[in-house]
Amino acid sequence: MKFNTVLLIGAPGAGKGTQGKILGTVPNFYHCACGEVFRNLTVESELGRTFIEYSSRGELVPDEYTIRLWRTYIENRTRSGQFRPEMDTLVLDGLPRNIYQAKMLADTLNVIAVFNLTCPDRSKLVARLQRRALRDNRLDDANVEVIIARLSLYDKETKPVLAYYGPDLVRTIDAIQPPILVLQSLLAMLPRPA
Ligand code: AMP
Image (cartoon, rainbow, N blue to C red; front, side, top):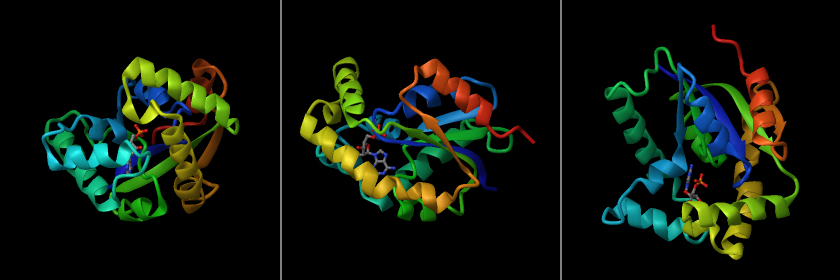
């Protein structure tokens, strides 16, 4: 059975996590942030060390590792009853990060909407990430060079995912607005439950 899924796509700092967390509090929505799945690994594990190695350079963790880890995570959440695929809509944030990952997930996800959180002004994203570095103690947001690498990687690898899913599924939202207005737009454009 494929998971009914809403994707949150946007550059680092665009607010995917903020919006995903809020949506995840609504009954019958389950939020999963791929970066959080990685951050919950311990440094003692091989995968945890791999994550630190790549994320500290602003790079993506290799696709096979990522998809394997995510599948294990979501299987565990399903087994424990936290995610109920037959009634919940999955709100996926930070995955897929490139077309290859999107293809690998095609047998698992029934994508019903793709929210494209846009912010053309890079300096605003950099400022947001620097604030987050202090607040959340995130290594990958602490260094401007790493931030720039992550933003460039987004343009090169992740943006093409929007074309992969196509205009019928993609809904674009201005991520510069205050979070409450982003949320309002998102809720207005969310497909109605069947
Ligand atoms: P995020 O919290 O989404 O900004 O992700 C933080 C870091 O985790 C990224 O810079 C990557 O190193 C890694 N990461 C998160 N999601 C993925 C993914 N789908 N594929 C590969 N690496 C990822």
